[in-house]
Amino acid sequence: MLEVGRGVCSFFAGGCAFLAYQAIIASRRAGKITNWIVGAAAGAWALTFIVRQLAALALRLDPGVRRAIFDAMQMWPVMVLFPLTILALALAETRRGTLGKRIAFLGDISYSCYLLHFPLQFLFFAVITSFTLDRSIFYAPWFMLLFFAALLSLSFCSFHYFELPAQRLLRRRWS
Image (cartoon, rainbow, N blue to C red; front, side, top):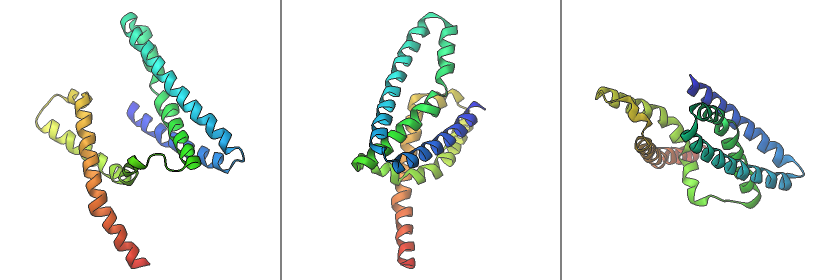
């Protein structure tokens, strides 16, 4: 149930980041606010790394302290770190032009990723359970890398061989 709550919080945190972006861009002090937001995002990442290091130390000390740090850090990335980072990157790109031209393909395939991730998760789950493998495999880092490699590959193919041709066809018909 925690995962559903995290997903709902992520959705609304992203919406709030977009609303903040629109308000900041419309402001007369957008430049100063952008600098502050970028600094806050950098500080939030630094704080995250420091707290993670403290959590690693606490791991050796007391299970109660470790659990308190873990509980406190559960929603931090979802509610603060990721939305703040996305807001900072969007504002910086708006002020300075394209920052991530080399990774722009991720934006191109994002809709395909969105559409394909759930069916692919379902397929992975069906295959793993049909072979009666231990479900703890889903928590292995290599399995996550495998999933994302498959997702990004499928999304790239979907974008280039379905979305782009469909866009061209629709544009020709309606232009």
